[in-house]
Length: 192
Image (cartoon, rainbow, N blue to C red):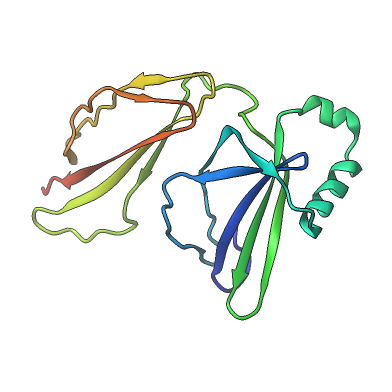
C-alpha cells in the first residue's frame, strides 16, 4: 500500500531463499511500469519455478536479510521451512528511493483451497453508457497448486442486465502448476 502523498513506482521485486536468489517470473506484467497512486494498493503476481536459483551476490541487502533471519527463533524456522524473503525496490518523484522487505513468505498457501484455481477479473473502473457499449473484461485464471496439471473450462453466464460476448463457454484449458490463462470477453449492458 502506498501511504505516501505522491505516486510510487515499484522498480523490481527480488526473492531470496537462504543464500540463493530465486528467479522471479512476473505473470501478466510484460514490461509495464508499476505505479501505485497515493492510498492505493498493488497486487503483483509472480511465479517461482523449482531449480531457478543462483547464488546471491554478497551485498548489504543479503546481510540485512541474514541478520533478520538470525533474530528469529529457530523454533519458528522449523514451523515454516518452506518460506522465502521478498525485497521490493521502489522510487518516488525526485531522489527518494528505498526497499520494502517481506520476511518468511510461504511458498505455498498455508492451507490448500478446495479449488486450486485463482480467478482475477480486470475491467475499466468507469464506462459511460452509450448505445452498443461493449466493455472489455480480462479474465485471468491461475493454477495456484504446485501439485500438478489442472484442466477446466469457464462459462460466462448472462443476466437480465449484462450479456457476455466473446465466449459463452471456453475450450478445455490445461494449466501446469503456477501458470495462468488469460482471455478477454466483453460485457454488453442491456439498455432498458
